[in-house]
Image (cartoon, rainbow, N blue to C red; front, side, top):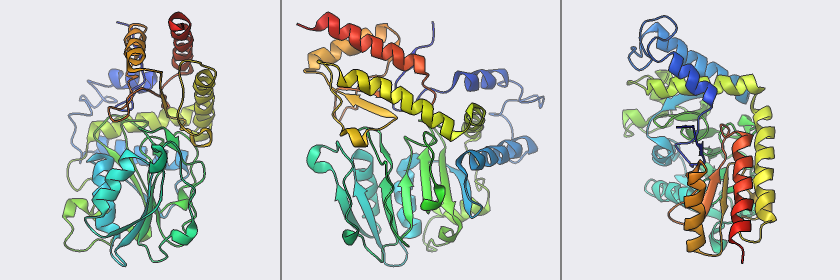
Length: 361
């Protein structure tokens, strides 16, 4: 069977070049006689993989020297707890911006450990925009300020990062990680589940500024203390070795493309193709405010559930799969992450137009 264009929100497409490299090295990684899945995480081969993964990521993101890169498990969902466990240590207050499903979960988790001040929300319009923030509402003594830079389910994205002054800015960047240029120095801590833009499920990338390491109270479990992860170079216990290896291949693929800036240009072009098609359609509509539209996740709706079902069934037959919207919102959603080729978006646009012509009254 030919490979399909997979528009899943995650786990998502991986670059074909990466998959072919992994295939070639599956049984024998660079002459060591074993797979990455079989080798000891304490051995020289995997130590080299881990070191190179970190080095390439630092290069393509321009990560300053006073930041550590660690590879953890538990997804972004574990970070919802790990962030407050480590950082809610002084005022025990944190500011959060509520822009959808995943921020909601992060807020709920943080409330278990301290006081959460929701300084902005787009709930009044079904999270279809990024709220304008009033700095007067920010907590000057907050231990940190948390945002979700791209909302996977709702399809919104920050185009301007809030200025939080001396309060550390923390960001869940899971669904737009490595999709556009980011000034890491504006953030104190960045975390991302890998299964959208960086690799397979099973590993979470955390980029943390040095001054935030070592703040966790002694009551915090060892495995949830950033200091332990940093001091042990992500290997206090056995890390998700194969997932880290695939991430390394993806980071190298991005570097060969010309870096994150080159990837951003491709992503902007892909998104424009799809949004232009939706904006000119009489059957489909993109509900997100234009100025806040995601480059990665494009939700769109039709006039009825019946049309949705027909569209999804016929799209699947054309090799355009995983286009159903999240179960909480319905409709359709095309996730066009870094690995989605322009040809996939062009095929989706052509299908949208073909379907509309065939089903318009």
